[in-house]
Length: 337
View 1 (cartoon, rainbow, N blue to C red):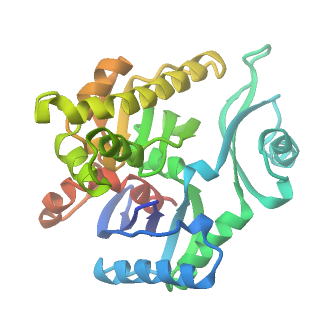
View 2: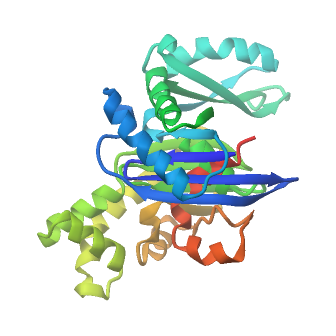
View 3: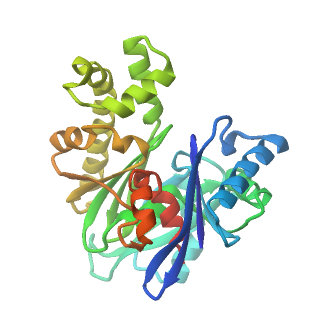
């Protein structure tokens, strides 16, 4: 299966082959692009332009299959956990759309709605019942992503949210972890309980905000700021700590949102405390980012490697190492069964 993740600045593609219970990497590629994101496109020629970028990427990456799973950006998706009494699976499936009206800000008729049962308990009292994950996306947005992939000469077989795909690629099934995906235009936060996405939140602060902060503070161009951010990050010893000082307020904003998300999950959702924070996305590779987060969030922080359990030929391991944080969503999409 192929996974395609069309981000706000880059497009990532991964093709995996399943061998029994494991996967092996067939092909992968990443390309940068600029311009309007798919969700904001209204003209056919804009869609044709990005479809050509995808088509070229697939050729250069030597993608061999046509069937793809594509992601929809997390900020455009509505995700919520709902508690039901002890109903059967079919009863929940019937009730979910009526329940969805209370939780999504668009008419149900204009949304594509999916759900997954997270937990079922037959005990009496407040601890009993069924916890269900509700996921909804505007139909018009999903159709745009499907159309672009079709125009690239591929066959979309499924559409998923970024965090569901990322959970599949990066989360262990034996504990509760916090996922933080630092993309170009948004930071997506998820709590994954034993492999199941249990909570998600998206905020419009990420790589672009880091670059703007450096550009404004040092009075340099965004292009220079991007290079400085990648080279020096949060290191206090580089450039007299000027880059770190510019980035600190944005990092604090992200950390505050992470803490709020965990607090909400523990108090309102009565969830289990995450033991580890797993980072992904381009900005997770900034120098000293991991140590800065470790000090402020109070838990172990790791950069997730979506290829950790994927069989890769030795020649590709080194080549993929520096790009691994970018590929989390695409790998998770390709792992979908």
